[in-house]
Length: 285
Image (tube, rainbow, N blue to C red):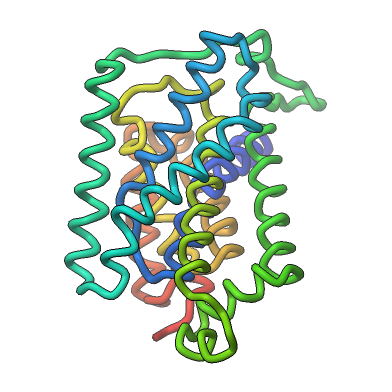
């Protein structure tokens, strides 16, 4: 049973990490906390759902459509909402992204109402049996996407010119500009990539979760816990923290009660921050 709990926790943690990677990237570069992050996840889930309903496109195949589409949506949102508040006070940034969150939720409610919608494929409830353990196939695929996305982001940031420019802007924007980096372009690209990553998460979550206008709120609180626990701006910290939260959630849900699992990981979250206020892999300002 302990082995099964470990497997369930790791797979759930991979899902949380995948959702958190985009938010971590955006804050690490731009120092803006995107409170509308969950709503971009919701839009990606709806896009995947309608592609399945109208064109019978498998959710995993729809990634090739949803991710580029949401990248463009992210660019538009950046130009209209984020760019004007880059240098604004923090409270203005909070209210702007929070307002964007409410607006996107209301738009989804207006267009698609509050109905819960689901995608059911032939493999939605399929599980692989490995000895005495079973592994849910959709969660395993989501975990593999999380690892692949993390590796891709590390390669992109370390080996490409754009990635090095993004890292330079994250470390010191003024110095990066002096070296010829177009800071506005870097910010716009980083925001678009962050939205693309969360849209990828949305596409792989559709076979597991229902789609509704406030589904982003279900994930965003957990995402903030993962991001802060791992260290705001740390990609590998988000992955490690996601796995930790997944394991805590699985263990507490089994040994205590499912209704207490949120309480347990929030208590542990607070205790860790008391010891390390910057998170596990974060750096003090």
